[in-house]
Image (cartoon, rainbow, N blue to C red; front, side, top):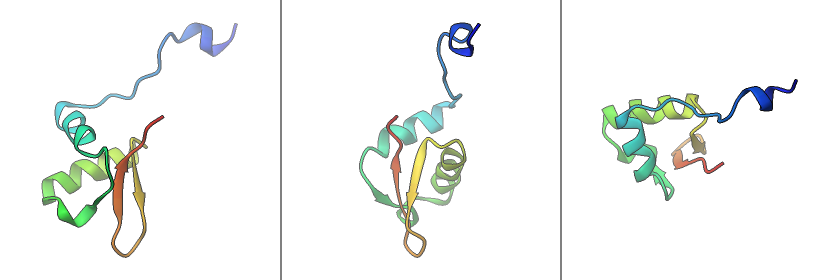
Length: 66
């Protein structure tokens, strides 16, 4: 039996703040243009691989569409 047969859907848990942030990140935006709380939420989304961080000096973030 394959794992795909056991698991119907694969979803990563997101809370309401994270869902709202993913809606905002449809286009690239500078990470430092967000408030400290929003940056904290975005960093959590980066760890969950739901958001991509581009660059090191002035990073941009965008939602990961998979």
